Amino acid sequence: MARRIKPLIAGNWKMNGLRASKGEVTKLARKLARGGKPACDVLICPPATIVGLLKETAKGSPVAIGGQDCHAAASGAHTGDVSAEMLKDLGARYVIVGHSERRADHGETDKLVRAKAETAHRAGLTAIVCVGETEAERDEGAALKVIRRQLKGSLPDGIAARTTVVAYEPVWAIGTGRTPTTEDVAKVHKEIRKQLVKRFGDEGEKVRILYGGSVKPSNAAELLAVENVNGALVGGASLKADDFYGIVAASA
Ligand code: 13P
Image 1 (cartoon, protein in one colour):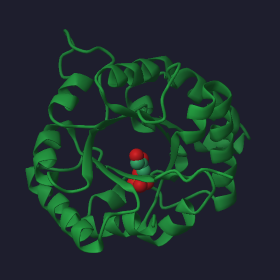
Image 2: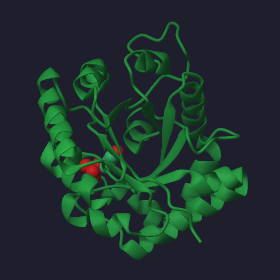
Image 3: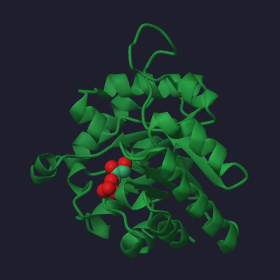
C-alpha cells in the first residue's frame, strides 16, 4: 500500500511582491490559525528582497519561507546573485531550483540545476527541483523522455526525501489556465516516482512530487487527489491569501 506522504503546498510569487505584501502572509497565517492545523506543509517563496521580512511576518505560524533560486556557489564574485547561505541566513527553509522560467530566461541547464540543488543542501535548505516539458515536446510525444532526462541531470546523487522535493510543471500549463487531464498528471507522476525509486530506492518512495501549472482553488482538490501528487507549486493563485488558503484547504 502506498505510504501517506504529508503534502506540501508551495507558493511561488515569482517577480511579484513588495514589502507591503506582508499583509497577505499575515492574512494567510490568520486563516490557518482559524482553520486549525493544516493537513499539509505550507510554504511561500517570495522574491529574495522580502524573504527576511516575510520570515518575520510568518513567525509563530505554520507558514515556511523559501527562495526562488540560488547561485551554485556558496559565495564569491557573482554580482547580483543570491546564495543558498544568504537565503538560509534570512530564515528560508526551502529554495526552488530549475524553474522553467529560469531554464528559459537564463539558459539554465540540468547540470547547473543539479549544482544549485547540491549547494542548497550544503546550506541546509530543502531543494525543490522543477522539471516539465514544453508544449512542442508534449506534441511530439516526448514528454516522458524529457522529464526522465531532466530528472537524471538535475537531481544530485544520494538525495534524502526530507531535503529534496520534485515539482512537475508542464511549461504550457504555467500561467495559461490550462491543465493536463488528471490521467496525464497521473501518468507523469507515476513515471517520476518510478525514476526516483529506481535511483534512490526507499528514499525515492518518500520524495514529495508536486504538480504545478494553473493550480487554483477550483481545481486543487481534483489535482491533489491524483496518485503520486504530493502537493502543489502555485504561481498566480499564491499571491492572494484567500486563493492560496483555498488550495491549502483542498489538500485535507
Ligand atoms: P501558475 O500557477 O501561475 O500557473 O504558475 C505555476 C508556476 O510556475 C509555479 O512555479
